[in-house]
Image (tube, rainbow, N blue to C red; front, side):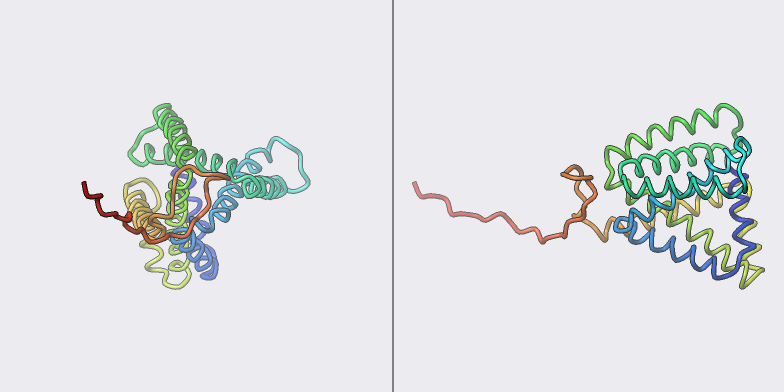
Length: 231
């Protein structure tokens, strides 16, 4: 997981400033309005998971081009996540909580089977909670994805425009250490708080349909009082 982090940071650092701006804006939109654009989040996570699966299967299957299976996997998984939001939420929960379960132990120096045990337990627990409280978890997962977009986008922008700042920031967030987890925690908490305040009173667990419908908040009026009947 640490190696994946380094790969992503190194890749975005070699891209143009426009790529960093696009990723930064996407992260901002998901972090601030993730509840309204949840299908976009599901499509992004589905595309990443599908591309990873296709990349893993490429050496095992003979294809005319190396990019064929990753692209095909990204399109199919992203399309299925958009079409069936329940499946998309399940996939997103397994991917995000499983990644966190594998990533955080490595950041503190754990290796081997303890990492996989923590990853499996966190993926299972996070997925169960996500499916039981889907509305609240949409806000949390979109806040996390938005925070990732902000960090990755800032690395791309700063590396292309102000290399000194980009190099310094990359040294902070790449490799092992608690700088990046703490930064993610701060940004995720801030965005989750913003979304919760924005839709305060609108999110209700349960309901009909897919359980994800926003309802406009209405002012709460006091119950009408009637004078007591005289004896």
